[in-house]
Image 1 (cartoon, rainbow, N blue to C red):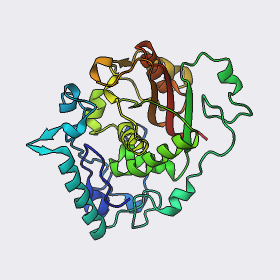
Image 2: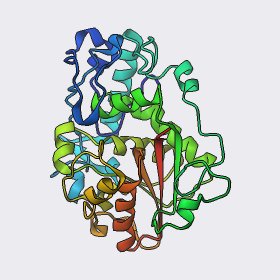
Image 3: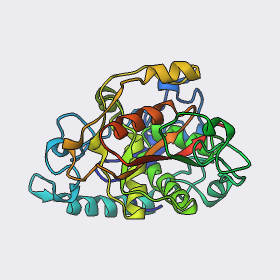
Length: 318
């Protein structure tokens, strides 16, 4: 894990390596469904990390929104090529890792973002599961999916939404520990290979522009970037936009979740140089509960000519 840098985002290296120097989170802090209590050893790990995009297309008005969105390596800022800045970030973080070893998000042990013991503790799904909803079943498709009108071609997940994966996802999503995208994104890539999935383009489930501005990054996009890089697949995030702000899905019933995201996503092929027509899309997100968000994204992509859409997530409910 040491020395990893997430493209386009500066991580809060002081908070990551020296949690005792970072601002502590208030007790009970729970943004948008985040954890109500955190492990004491990680109490100070940057709950309000200020992640500044370097040249990402993930925020409104950014350099990649209108110029070469699928070729970030061409973007320059202040005359310095992005690759050179990322290389400098790589070595800077490697030096910090040596001086101040990072803490494991799962058990708070020193030495890595996710220690080998916690990696082993994330139990991969073993039993036979439905290819369309990832729930246990005896055949290829479960009875519910066999008679449903879902437009999602396939869904696969790494593991159940249990510890220590739950804490890792919450720290990535709500605490700003963006470097966790590396081990978690690698799990997604391994899951892709395990289930012999095939895709032409990778797209992250987008956040609404205002929510992404407040958070500073899209956690699903960080995961998708790592996963796509390991698989050698191109990313086409600008193709899918969240055009309507929605209430948080947490706490809503299945029918309320579906209604909440109706018309929330829009596919805009003109925003990407990569072809959409007939392509197989791999959607990336952190957790799938009822599939309402993934289904809404799938509908928007199919309406604009995508061939088929399959989804890959870190976790599903136990």
